[in-house]
Length: 390
Image (tube, rainbow, N blue to C red; front, side, top):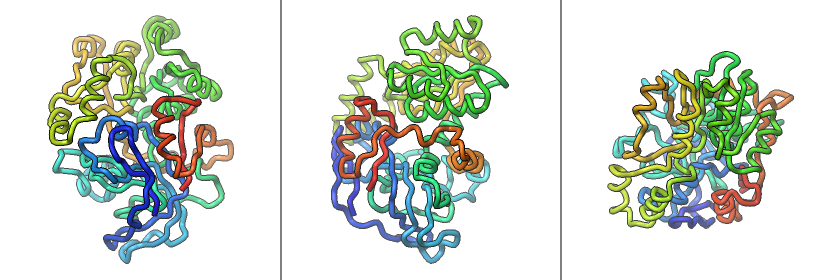
């Protein structure tokens, strides 16, 4: 089968690889029909080579059709259309029973002290082959699939794999009061959905992003937007000088700013794994421009909800400001299946209230994935969301 493989920093390549096959009786094989490039895939493209091996298959936003099931898979049938949550969970452990599937005790990567295994990520999260491929092996397939209908296009369902529940969790964690103001920092795919969800729930939503095309897309869905240069002042002006009731940071470690940290990212990403790993695990830093802006623009007593991925272990935090403003922080990897039942009626609604069919800007064939990683990272050609067609 063909699959998108990691080959080095800023180098990915579609190659012929061994076919996905059943390894356990609880596995299923999925023929992939749509698979997206996620913002967190860019972390692997740019920085996390220390935890990857050449040939690793990337991708964790996947849906398709069941091709084969193991003898202990009881809820799936061949030919069924399914979405694959990006985190791999058992559905039965202490964490899963509490809606914390991203912390599943069955699939936790204890070697690195990490949470649940993820598709298409690094050794930190199990190094499980991902879905940017023609076929995907799904472990514990009864739980790690979301059956969907046959009539609606893939875009209605595909984003249930990651970015839509990630956005929903981000807004849920923000604890916005009824009719309150929600600022969304970063209008990439997660930020677009977070802003739309906030508006759907009746909040006054302001999106923040330096890229005009992203602001224009948000505005098409009734979201006020501002550039990032004067965002804090603009949000204070819109909220009687107090700041937003809550802020979702939908950017994370890819934020612009801090050229020193950016240079360190480039340097570490180029080092051999044996040298880079201990540096990242003890002295890693993020570009925290988005997070600092979020802390500035939230009102006293408000909440900052972090959906963007951060990985630094030595990041400086403005503890004086956080304490003085009495800010609540919520964050964490999305617990996909916790939110599926809430989101399914919205993605299947006739009026598509979250605009799932108005997000994708580029639909290349899988063979063109490498060029679109580069395009997505550079935010060129109006690129906001890439969905690959195997």
